[in-house]
Image (cartoon, rainbow, N blue to C red; front, side, top):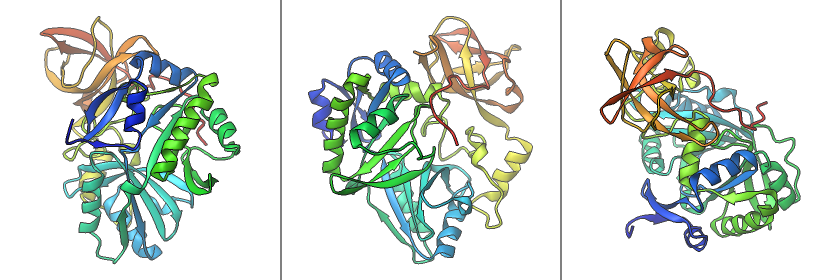
Length: 370
């Protein structure tokens, strides 16, 4: 792991006996105790995550130029955003594929921040620079920011009591800037688990301090540190797509299962006609949730067949759901088979196992949507 990047919490994770693994060019904790225990603690009480490997890119400029720029490169409607609102969006390439899925933060009409995935923020930054013909100020400040996430039904209670601040009026997918230990800190009511909680952006030194103090403060409430293993099972239960699995530079947002963020715009984005046509007429392939009926565990890249033996797609993610005690996954299949409870078959170790298309949410978390 010599060439891997390390977050400021790297030594802290090791002191907590975390098992460290390579992830997106970073050395990250996969688990501290067990994936199942960390997963269930987050669903029942709260979990604390190191996500400071994510990227933060700031964009500043004249309002009309900035909106025009963001509209051209992303498929969701940026003009609808209010100040201090967060939006799930995607940065598109010239073929309609995803450079990355992002969360977009609006500070003011003249200032936005993009939070990008760890393995992608450098290429997102280069992509933005490539199309910057409006003299916008675009800065990759990822090295200056630390990010941790507290998630779960007790996340609000723990962090509010720890910080002595009231976040009850902070709506889902909104953020605020507060003073903590003399520093301006961004508190965002967002996450990647399906549970209520916050993502906390600060300086690196303050982020390490907050992590240690919140973890100690939250122990009586059931708060535990959580690694990438449970982060993955939590997002899978919430049916959240992951770049490199459901999302890629060769799949459009519609094909990837995030077509709900595709909007019609007067100022068309890259590959606009292709993506809008797919949304209106359905793409040939689509991303869906699946549940295994027969025994076994779903993993990525398993072949999927119809009842008549036709190969119709493959799994993109899969695993054991600690909450449901079932094997669940996401799959990229022919759109004609996208029907709730439709029976399909997954090839696992040369044996076809029965599964069903599952269109509803796998879990109902504690997220309080506005």
